[in-house]
Image (cartoon, rainbow, N blue to C red; front, side, top):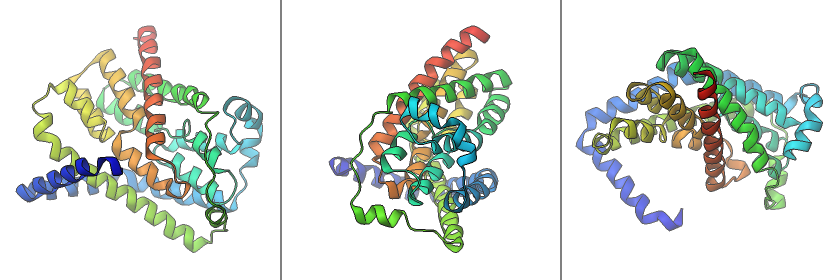
Amino acid sequence: MKKYRTFITILIFYFLFSMVAMPKLFLQTTLGGISAWASSVLPSLLPFVFFTKLLSSYGDVSFITKPFAKPIKKLFFAPSESAYVFFMSMVSGYPVGAKITADLYESGKIARADAFKMMSFCSTSGPMFIIGAVGVGMLGNATFGYIIFISHILGALINGLLYRKIKVQDLPPSLEQTSKKQTDLSQIVIDTCLSVLSVGAIIAVFFVVIQSFDPLLSLMPKEVSSILAGLVEITKGCLDISSSLSGLLSVVACTFVITFGGLSTIMQSLTMLDKIKMPASLFTLQKFTHALLATLISVILCFIFL
């Protein structure tokens, strides 16, 4: 980040100037982000985060992970807990995979290197968003949603193979010991609230970011601007893609945008992974390769089924 201080400073001043120039518009935009979080994200994310945190701290997931222990270790060089994280991430979507991985690390059940490997294939969106919201709701075709979802999941598994031999520098002993302390129930409640609130704050901020860039995006072709918007915030991007592209192109574009996750989702996940000290560059690279793989798979599936 130090290398880009000047650029970041200019960018922040640009955002501030935009908000001062059009305060009413940006107030509505921020409220829109908060509303989207409160109506769509909060009801589903809060109970998932609470119960998965509770399970990671006090529960025993061995009966779920034991059948997958050997395949997981052989394919991904990762612990059996990866199967549990992968399944929960696949069912519930971003950023639950990152949150559970961080919880397992904090409770001392996985090592830091394991967490880095797991993030290459355990950071996924869920079927409710991909098939329901995007496939049926935005693209108007459930088949499109299934193609995106299958491509997304297969891409994650292949992506895990790419990073299975990743080498990670250990944290200082003091940090490792701190991360393995038992977490009491009150702390779980506080941690859940802070995690969910941080997601809401990031969503609201990135709604503002997209609005700030709107004058620049309006100068570009709609097809290009919709994908760029998706690289910032996936819901807005998929909505724009559905109105600017159709057929195979809309499926492929949505697959890339959803799988990459957008800067908003990446920030949400990195917030969850704070105690693991996972480099933003590595996590972003993992999401980018995942997106490329999923996009390639989606092209193949489109030619087969469409």
